[in-house]
Length: 242
Length: 242
DNA sequence: CGCGACTTTGAAGTAAATCAATGGGCGTGG
DNA sequence: CCACGCCCATTGATTTACTTCAAAGTCGCG
Image (cartoon, rainbow over all chains, first blue to last red; front, side):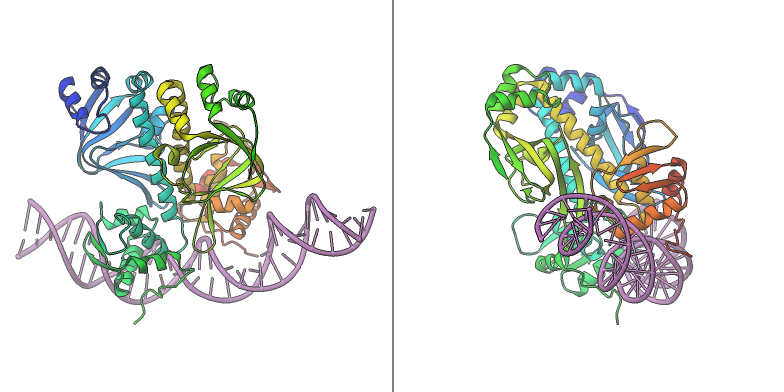
């Protein structure tokens, strides 16, 4: 996790391109940049651990960061996978509380760290920034709700169906493709399953003709079938017959 | 769910007492009140359902509201129990999305409904209000993280221990009391357990001398023991021996 | 071509859900 | 004031879906 010396102007340019900070007043952007620095983290390197003080907002320039809770069984629950243009760590930052989860790089990544004091002050001065933060946090809440919804149901088949349906593009009832954002192991962890169980569910859904699996590419053929499985009171897969 | 005709001044007075809105400019408070109304909901009456449009911020004046996700098995996952002075529905409100969960009154309750347009406009004008909303949302995120943490672990004993530890007042290593905010059935649903399992875990922890249970009052005698159970790789309770 | 990470497959053990029935607490009404 | 009924909680017996452990198979990459 190396600090990367970038000029304030360079950082400002990166920020301006991020959408998160688009259309802010030039002065605001300048102040934020002044209190920012860039770091590089390598694959599997930790960004922060649970309990660390939250003194900066992390913005992902490129790469991928995994946010997760570690549990007793050395199992882990993946909370989020953060990619280009997104941020993490706001909630703890705003409240001045320690981070509730761990963050680790899934691939070599560049991050921007915005200083807490500066950010809070600018949010006070420039309403648009505060609103952006509100929007970001709201999304996080909605995501977490989805998460609870998918990792909660009793049956693993329901969880997997639910997950696949959440990736559905729009109204379309037809088929669609999903490119898993990470390894199946991590996806399983996000659904609170073991990789073995996830594999078996994929296999079952394939046999049923609901999906096709090619590595990280999942092709959903029949989303209606997925809906049925999601709703079903408990159609036991009888996982491995014949 | 009856509308309750209150004068703008009355609503303003209630708002001002709520802490959430304390110290806002008088003008802001006045505008918010103008776009507000009060409703009364009776026990077991729904406030909104999943999928309903979010056009108001709900603030609980008194009573208790249960936020929950309903699942296939007619099981439900309790997300939050909202009480006096707290609010719910902000995330969906801010994003203009439908509510991701259901809300129902656990007891007769009085709610204040703040109009979406008004709120968003005032948040734009008055930084303090935006910051209050940010704080509220941040708390929600932290709560949801806690929730994931407690309802996720494999073992039910770990989940229950984790839950009891989260209610711990402060640094204190000694004992402490917990008054469950709702029925054991609802608490079980919050931990993603059945009431039967929760009952058995309480019973086990009692036998171990870690807690004492008297109805809704849980007396934690030995929080270290709880910590051990929470961490333990898997000390199977062997639930009902002898 | 061969190593290491990721994934799949198989067999077995177990924790928790489910089903079912009893017990306790409390309010309502006789 | 007691009796009834309802809801909540407990207890027991059974079932099963998922984890766990173990090993082979696949893929991509140096």
